[in-house]
Length: 293
Length: 318
Image (cartoon, rainbow over all chains, first blue to last red; front, top):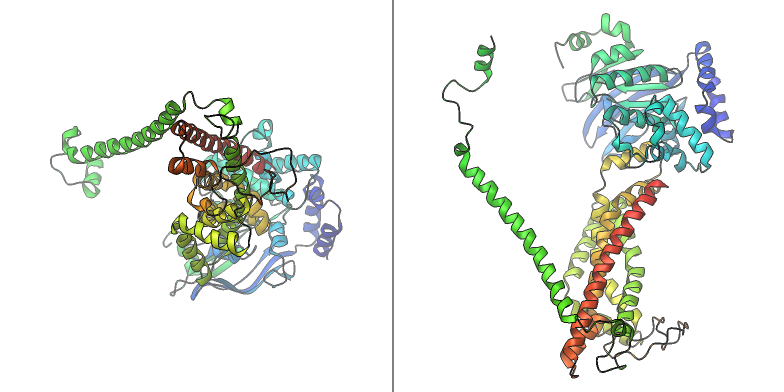
């Protein structure tokens, strides 16, 4: 299978970072995707507990390779919690426990012998509030690759440039990469810097937890454009409160809501066009039409 | 239309409160009083520091000279402070060498690794308890352990270890606080990029905590410079002999570089002169020594802050 080969190639290639970020690579990936529409992430009966409290109950869904899945639903419906189990960020929350399976290309990321460090390199994350490190723009983008042991100056420079270009930030920052702090950028630029920082670690999946909710409308549109471009090479899962945003950017939409006991669950999932025009469930229809939530 | 809307949600019709100041006189007065009191307190603290510095600068005028700093007590009637100044710097370096790494590592453990359990609350209790033990008692403990039990006699090492014992809790606690003050989102961002916990600590948390860590180092250093009680019984109170700085044999108690020799520091020397000095220039020597002690503390503080800025820049850039 194509995905298996890709993993093998990544594992044995001397400089996997450069290869996958290479401008030619996305096109190659695209070709593969048209022939086989593979499943990137497959969750089976995922339930997440905070101590005794069930936050997410029994969610099973699949994410296609090189597509955008939007998770929508009212506050407290467990969308973000569910998103965080894809890269095991829930491990950091004391008392949180996850049941069920999350398969990344067939491998269960919940297995105890999975390296979360490796997992988080393959499944990157962009947060709600832009969170660049208080370092130069260059060092922000180079952070992931450096931690992975990349030292060669020229390779780092190349990688920083390609990552910033792919995040549509290069032209705005190329003149003060090393002198300007990431925190000196505008909110929208900061968020694109955070995306560039994730791209530099050569991920396959990018999780976005309400990436535009702290941004102005123009910056929001730029992030959305960027997501559509990145979709050609990456699998994206986005949590959003903004239904127009879900409708604009996503290929598939999953609607979550809360049960009587306040546990979040998946109501329905389907192609975005259908979910927004002909939802099967009444709850979805009510939420989308604004009657609830 | 707008009128009805504002009536529905706004304040009821009636006399509007005036925008003139009289209407909220009480709270404005309280606000001004608070501003005045806080300014006053700040100025008072500054004046206090200023007057101490000015007092000793004036008192030491004519006493402190290159030869006063660079000669032995027995060289002239006015004496000199070179050996005790050297001992203060030596003790500071030795204590910092032991206390800073342990203090920061302990702080990292407490802030990043230890959970909230019986062990950590016992550690916290011990930190507070040791910090509040009178320093003379810590000195006695050092006397019993290092001087008598270990048969070291009065040594610089014994003094440094007693000072470490005295300062480690503060150093650990301040380090822990500095590390905890780094926002959680920096940790999350680093971990989400596939950094390990140690990489996150090494490359994000510690660099960002450096200003706070430096504060810990400065406070500890100030206590080392100024401490006399702990050292009376551990590193000794005798007037030091002439030091031969070319003697680099660390095992030879005659070498000023050796940790196994008595080491009377500047503070202890001041105490000794004040309580048993008899020379006619006693008071001048005390003032001079005190001025030098204060200068050392100030130089160290400024130097540490500068070093901290350089370190932050280098650590976040690499």
